[in-house]
Image (tube, rainbow, N blue to C red):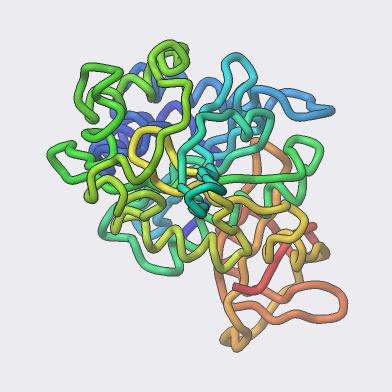
Length: 337
């Protein structure tokens, strides 16, 4: 069985291992002990803060394999990006070049540097140990944070977005970065990706070109990876697309990976989640798999298990109740997986 809970300082060594395993391209989860420790501290502060409206809070959760009590994954939520410095993306749009005299009318795709996502909540850093990258574990981890958002809507914006990792290889080569970014930063993709995760992002605004980038002027390899999801992120992307996230023309400025977004209230887990009492279930569970959550803020816990919906609540067996630290009659939140 798996359990999702808020991160703690004791999880730091496990997070380091996950960050190293994740490799290049996940800038919000760098393989840097000091930065990861800062993220844990920021998460603990955020869970303990009274919030009326979203600000610079950041919440980090871990996935635990209860059979071994090992941390095997993590994910997070930024309540609002761009609080201190703008959050930059490329918006894909078209520029019209026309000549009535020559009867030519061309619509040319171009990349416009923007910070349209500044002030928006973001899902971050879904990383799962390779031995546990099954659909149940990844779906539980990804969707548990949506149940948290549904429970505390005042802590997040009405729109959510996710940056998906773009094309790069294990050696740190990115066709898009090689064709564009490195000419302005004079560093390779691996270093730029690392600096973006561990330092102030003002350098992005200082060095990125301000004018539109005409896509046809880029090499074919760079054009071909614009909006393409890294193969290692395809499973997590599928879960989010099933939830209702959509691509609306924004890509990352480093690797051109797509950003997907949605209105929070329209997401499947948010719109279909229910709340009620935990009921005792005798015998072998026959119901479908459910995502089940309980607890307040820093004591938030979530798991996935077979359960049987009833008029008075959700019937779950004793093992699930013990895993969540609850008893019959406790308040829970659930949604079918």
